[in-house]
Length: 177
Image (cartoon, rainbow, N blue to C red; front, side, top):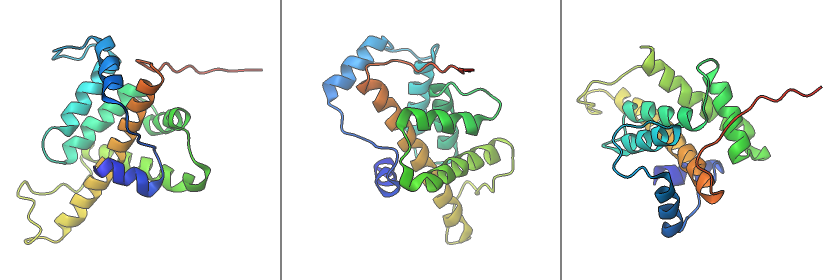
């Protein structure tokens, strides 16, 4: 729900309604079944996606979403944001009218993810009590917003795979002279 709202407000990425049987048939081809340990990239994407959706939205959801997105876009460990953003723009196409705002969302998502992973994000107490500290609401909004972006991007990315009857993306660097 938050991903769909986010997508509509920003105008990117486009989230569509897919027929249940189309999605079911796509999943059936993957033969994941009751797999509990992800062994392929697409399995890592889907299992991380399930983990991101498990429970309430939290900073952990952003880590799961970044794991799923980095697996989906096969991002190298150096310059992750740049590669992820460029690959997502190629796969999901970037509208010209809102380019700057969309780039800012990528940076925000990865700023929160990296801040948390590297110990610089202002984390909240487990009680997360807005009455005791008004800053809790600000932090929770940042997490909710970044989660909505990550979720919208992941859903749209997977939908494009399904629509194109693909099961994994492969990226190549091509040099022409």
